[in-house]
Length: 395
Image (tube, rainbow, N blue to C red; front, side, top):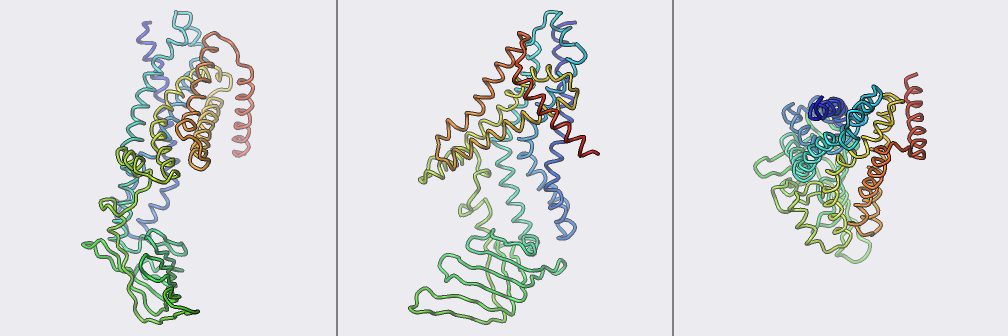
C-alpha cells in the first residue's frame, strides 16, 4: 500500500468522528440558547426567519470552541481504533514511523486552524455585533420583546426598568419600576401602575408611556432636605435605540463585537491601563485560539495510541480532560492578565507554550516507545473516574 493511500486512510479515520463530534457539541451548546429563542417565536410572535438569523449570528462563537474539541476527539478516537486493531504496528513494520503518521493529522489541523482563525478574527466579532443589532431591531418592531417580567433591564444607558408582569398579547407592562439616572436629569424613581411601549421605526426610538404613577426625586440643586413626589396620569419616557445600534458612533461595542481593525485602534487609543489590558488580552486570545487544533494534533496522536485499552469511552474521557485542562489554563491566564495586572502578552501565551512543550515530549517518547508512567497513571485515574460517574448516572 502506498504512503499516500495510508495518509488518506488515517485522514478518513479522523475526519468521520470529528464531523460527528462537531455536530453533537455545537448542538449541545446551542441548546442553552434554543429555549430562549423559541420563546420569542411562541410567546412574542417573532417571525421564525428572524430567530433563524439569531442562530446564524451565534454559530461562529460556538464553532470557535467546538471545532478544536471535535478535532481532538477525532484524533483520539481515530488513533485509538488504529492502535486497538494493531494497524499502527503494521504501519511501523512497513516503514512508516509515528512522525509519518502525524503528517495527515497536521494537514487536517492546519485546515481546522485556518477556519478557526477566520471565525475568531472576522466571523465571530461580526456575528456578535449582528446578534445584538438584530435583537434591538426586534425590540423596535416588537417593542415588548425586549422586556421580561420580573427581570431588571439595563440595556439603556442611565435607565433600569422592571415590570412585575407583562401581558403577552397587548404588551402592557404592569407594576412598573424605573430608576432614571440619565445625564442632565435629576436622579429619580418612577412607579407606575401600567406602561406601554410605542415604537417609532423611522426615528429608531421607543416611547415608554406610563399611566397612573408617581415620580420620586431629591433635587440636588436645592439646599436642605427636599424631596419631591409628583403624581401623574400619563408620563412619556423616550428610549433612543439609535444610540444602541452599531451603525452609529455613540453606541459602545463590547470587546467581543469589535472587528480586528477596531480592536487594534481601541487598544492604541485606550488611556486606562485596565481597559488597555482587557483589549490586549482579547487581541491575543483571537490569535491563540486558532492554534488549538495544531496543539491537539501533536498531543492527540500519542494519547490516542495509548488509550486503545480503554476503548472509545477512554478516548472520549481523555479528550474531555485535555480540552478542559487547556481552556481552564487559558481562562486562568486571562484572569491574571486582566485582574491581576500581569503582562498580558507573556501570561496569555503561557498555556500554549506549556502544551506545546508537553506535546513534543509526549510525541518523542511515543515515537521511541517509551512509557511516561506518571502521565499514564494520571490519565488512567481520570478516565476511570469519568467512566465510573457516567455509569452511575445511567443507573
